[in-house]
Image (tube, rainbow, N blue to C red; front, side, top):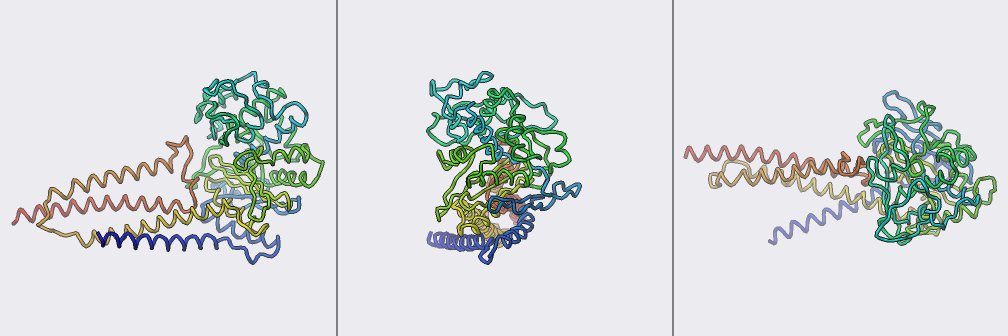
Length: 502
């Protein structure tokens, strides 16, 4: 017992040391303490981007910086199409997934500013084509403010999209759940009580815009938000002209994916470029600085940037950094696409990062936080948490590898014919252990790498960087148990033969 306790104690100490090492390595990885100017920051991020894209297996990316409300830098990295060797440039089109929500919130606030919608009225008054199903919460009121801030208590977090060759469902069919990956929009909690992310809430907002204007949502947004902002290469619906400009999407293994399109345009359907989205971010900054050249005024945007619950406003996430600086940002995740933007209203600076890969989130996290560190001297708390998770995952993998090496060494020393062992006690238990662990390996692969249990999403792409080391570790254990079972069988045969000769 003492020996076992001593072994556990040593393993715990080893794990802690590995964790501290990985944590320090992660914190120092993106150190920019020697950066003295914005131009140096751009150069450092440009250099880091290429190496990080290789590390995370990301084919292409586009980055833009906004300085003092003006677009200062736009650059493409890597490939928009690996097969053709097409490079990403400032005009390459990307899907920006849930960052569509921020732009869509502008569509709604434009109608509010025009007096056609009321943020705090019951949305039921605007709906005729589809109604929210009755629920156990009785006769409740849901408002546009709650839809845009994810506090309406509605279901349907995200959408997986449809192949471009499929027939798209109608908006009503999507809301009713007659589509892949959805169960229909319905209440799962009392409105206004809690934050619950709901892409379905924005799909309902899309229907309200259409009901109010009599126009398809994409047409209204194009004419009233995108084109007034000079976002001329952006749209909420797929059109043939995009075919020559849009990047190809890739999964976490670098395999090309279909172009997925969305009926739920308001929640996930925006196509744009780094140059165009930088115009949108710059517009936010300039409105906050007092500009009256845009479709929304300072009062409307300030209302949108006021957190409701969980730091979420109306289409924006708002965080306070340790120095009390306000950081406004949002991210987007579609299959094969990741996007990120952020800006500091008080400083007038912003950043846009677009990628055509399921692996893009970690690159976004690193670059966003390098930029934030330069701008304010602090990393956001969510980045510290992410770095800690990365270190934890890598440390668990390293510790498990060490244990595996010890098991292999121990097993190697124990192999050999030993007549005192009963042959019948060797193999059955080893087979059971082997089968159980192989089933675990298969389940691990199905859960994290196939999307079988997650509606088509590859969950590994949502895990912290370094998660693949944990997967390799699990696979190695699987191979070990198979090999051990095979060797045990040979040992059993030798023992049986030995006892028969005796």
